[in-house]
Length: 235
Image (tube, rainbow, N blue to C red; front, top):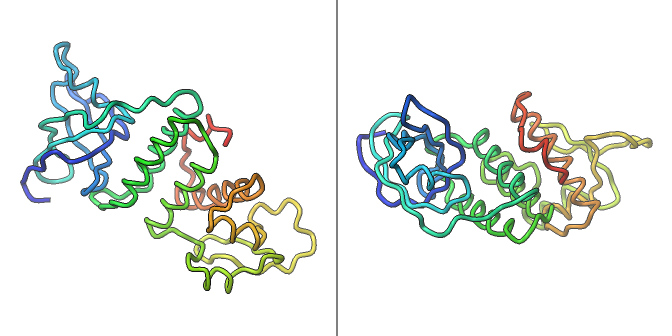
């Protein structure tokens, strides 16, 4: 990265941790620059009001500068009021943040993903609908190039027949299953439900299969790493 400053960039805090005696290292999701790490210097001092802004789920405008991987935060201000997520909705928001922390490469701009993330947070304020999480996961995988389901109607219906079953193998995709006993096969899905996942035609059975597919994809992508927030979610 060249030595330059960026001003008033829409952003959200994904995570922060103490750095030296008076500072924070802050992981940001920004609209036009993707995920990046900044040093917020001196914000842990008693007189600093900035620490109160550097919280997850707070729509911010941030300014930073520097070069290399680690930038210096120069200014931060509230773009809107903080979003109030409580209970399971809070755990869901933390789950979104963990997904982005683990899966996003730094400085990889994902403007549409940023917009989807923000819309998802606002939706969570009204309560936790499992469809909100499943839709975000599908969008995330697609935007990052991990999408395993065809998106056009033609390719979707060419790939899956509603009354057939398909076995999912990561990096190979879906293969038609000829097994007669399909009980207990965690990587087996009906063509009907796979089509419904793409079209986001949610019901309880489709949501269960979407969650199961997400877990299979994440298990491969995370390589054994655990998402702590997911252990708190029942959805």
